[in-house]
Amino acid sequence: MELFIDTADVKEIESAQAMGLLDGVTTNPTLVAKTGRPHREVLEEICELVSGPVSAEVHAVVYDEMMREARELATIAPNIVVKIPLIEEGIRAVRSLSDEGIKTNVTLCFSPLQGMLAAKAGATYISPFVGRLDDIGHDGMALVEQLVDMYERYDFETKVLVASVRSPSHVVEALRLGADVATIPFGVIAKLIHHPLTDAGLARFLEDAKAIPKT
Ligand code: E4P
Image (cartoon, rainbow, N blue to C red):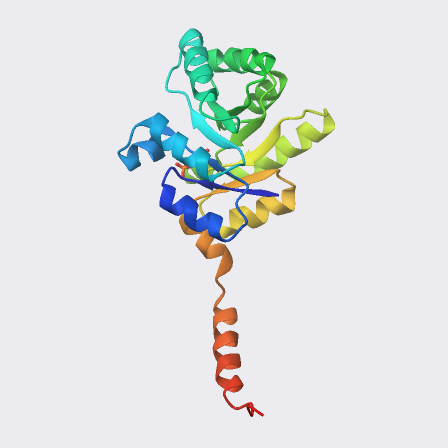
């Protein structure tokens, strides 16, 4: 499974990249707004740092405007993936962008039927928002399971990108279900590494190492 970071914060991306495990980046308007910087400027900087896929979201909700924005975003770098919301005009745009060879990440997916439409439109990625489903008492990972099974059964090439990840257990479940990608906030990436037994074990080893004769 590929690991993306879900952020527009360049410092967080640099830190995650230093581990050598970062496969890509996803951004959204909320994350870019937090940086206080212009959309294109932030994306240009991210694309200079990261060679894997970088998702950049359109702000339009009407087909013609989405297409214009998507084509403009795609000029930033060859690794840009245009993020399109899962609405009727969006699905239409995904079909056209796919025909033009522009990669897409269909965002705000909350049902298997939405996922089916995105795949039929030729989406490169589908983003089921698991945390937001959990928030309203639904089972976000059940949607991931339905999408993974559906795409396999019908040979859809669209990759399942688990989004709205809130905890390490979402990542464990994504792995168990065979998702293609999980996009993870910086704070959760840090939690993937740490384990109290590792810390305690290491402290003990370091202490015991002091008792080993030097020669
Ligand atoms: C995915 O691409 C989105 O940027 C993101 O995962 C949304 O997560 P949230 O529900 O924590 O805002």
